[in-house]
Image 1 (cartoon, each protein chain N blue to C red):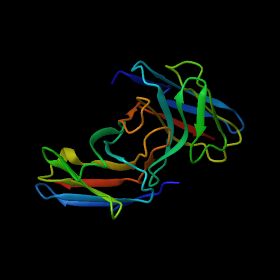
Image 2 (cartoon, each protein chain N blue to C red):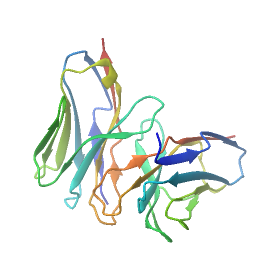
Image 3 (cartoon, rainbow over the protein chains, first blue to last red):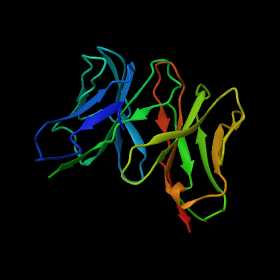
Image 4 (cartoon, rainbow over the protein chains, first blue to last red):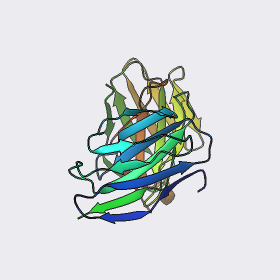
Length: 113
Length: 112
């Protein structure tokens, strides 16, 4: 299960608090992604980054923010503006060319009460 | 943007039977179509993929077919086994710097 890691596995927060999810990869991949997984809704793209210091919004970026200061790291912050943050979050990486396999991390389950 | 529809959402088959999952996509620019398997409590993993210049690809009991004209592609699993039970996701990828779009998933149950 090496290559791409996420921490923590479970995260609990109170409403109104920002929380940052960690994603690290040692695959030397240029591209990294954040997905949200809810039952029956598949994998929805939050943000993606093709290169250091650059990232694009996905389909559900509102209430989330990211940074890509290092090739290996792509942290996701869930802000208090996200109306329904409780979900399973998956990070992934791939080679930069597009049209290639995505390698997923083990995921972080976030619960906000 | 790209829209990927996946059917059925759930599928139950008897062990040894075949299973077929179908996906349609809307963007003709998509040229890479991977399939991922997610077992309960685990991360999605690629099981097979196909590129737009190929019509069919097989890997042991798994095959994928692509019809570019109709914009649909399918996953075929033959001689199903209990360990095939999982959620399967299709995806459409236009390559370059464009985002990948996933289907909503199919929960496959193989009944022993």
